[in-house]
Amino acid sequence: MDLVAHCGESVAGEYLHTLNAVDVATAWCELAAVHNRSQEAVTKVIDRMRKRLPFPLRGIDSDNDSAFLNAHLYRYCTDEKIEFTRSRPYKKNDQAHVEQKNWCVVRQLVGYRRYESREAWALLEAIYADWRRYVNFFQPVRKLVAKEREGSKVRKRYDVARTPFRRVEASPDVPEGSKEELRAEYLELNPVLLRRRIDQNLRALGRLPG
Image (cartoon, rainbow, N blue to C red; front, side):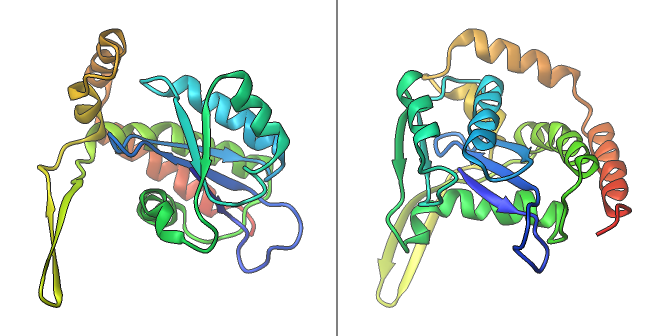
């Protein structure tokens, strides 16, 4: 998981963040707006996000950001028996899965403007409530399965593109009851209506003062 800052061109003061979490096995993506990067705020959002996951949260892997490396989150993970690991310093490729999603799932959607207000937070939460469903249920992704070097070239092989929902459905590690709940949710969703509502909220977000 990682934090995406909505600070515009200045990191002065407090501003909103997006907490982005990606499951490596299924590519399932969870997003939530965070008021600030305090230990308490980040831990509360992780707990809320955890309850939405279609599978148990076994572990958390983050970078070396103090928003994650702190006593508050450490106690939470210890109490809830969640394994906590972190990437190596200055090795951004250790976070390649979530870094890629930071761009295609967060930045391409909401951009780089600064957001501070509670109104902006509420709109981001409304956007992500629909966007997480749109991404997980209707956007197929390919996963890298092998890399082969041929001289100076590296050839990459990918599996067949499937949505995170279908990957969760096919996983033997996810309880059948959770899969049934996901199937029921999927049957109630309309991607056109989801996208329309997302776009409406994005326009409202864009009209807020910077």
